[in-house]
Length: 138
Image 1 (cartoon, helix red, strand yellow):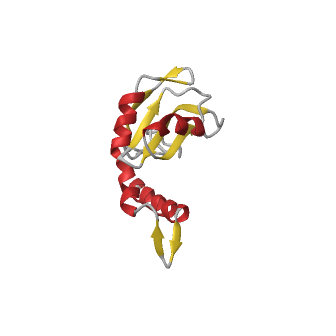
Image 2 (tube, helix red, strand yellow):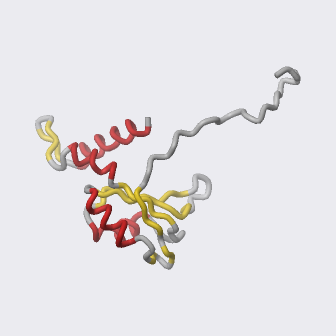
């Protein structure tokens, strides 16, 4: 499901960021938009002062950055100390990973690795086996 959501957002992003004439998208091809999915880096150990702009700026020297995102806490809005950077090419991502892993960014040593898809969450509500209805039948 996350894969299809990502493809849809890339299609929308490609269409809105590029000129569309006569129903044809002019600019980066859809192939390049799909390719960027395999060139996403995980950046760990970020300083709480690192924002998306400074993250993009730090990694843009290695190639075209499609997206730089710092993950924040839903309630406080404060950085959770990690983020993601996506490139248009695998080569740029690999170069950035080897060059930036272990380097200092905003006073903190960062870890850089290839991002992996998060495993689907299971469970949710319930669990624990406690029956709230008062019936002791299981």
